Image 1 (spheres, rainbow, N blue to C red):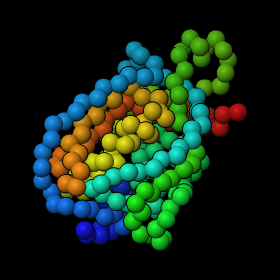
Image 2 (image 1 turned 120 degrees about the vertical axis):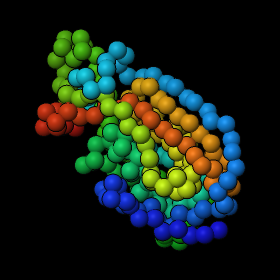
Image 3 (image 1 turned 30 degrees about the horizontal axis):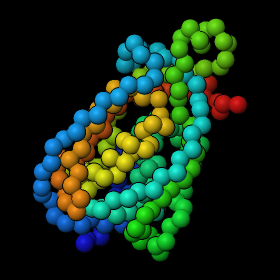
Image 4 (image 1 turned 90 degrees about the vertical axis):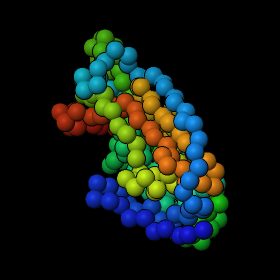
Length: 215
């Protein structure tokens, strides 16, 4: 096993480096890719078109279980925070912290876990937004590709994490058109690893001033 200290690239300067990521085995192997397509949210609204939305609170409790790559609790927290922000979580009141960790500070944990709360945008049908009078914000659908690193080898090491994100974190968001591929093989770095692209709600600039917390 080799210890890798990860630092954010220039494109990821807003994110804190993943810490003490432990990768076992060498790159190689092959497996079939699995495509997963899902649809949620308001159907019929094109990407980039205006979409009324409201802020709703979500709670997360996430335990990572991987055989190829291991994280410290602090490293998993940093990775999950980055993923939540990429998927549209509101940055200013995002709160994620480690819990139940058994390893020494900064060391790899056999089952690192995080918990916390955050706010996400949930679409509101146009007719409902006009008739109910409830406060909404201006948003639009935006396609994002969730990536933790630009290096193919490093991305392969995060394959299991991205699989678990697709299964257990993505359902916390209002999404459409989920495109997911996975080539994860336990104890191997398989290139390409996993890829996740999805339509999520993004706040319009003119809606930013309306981004008050929900009651």
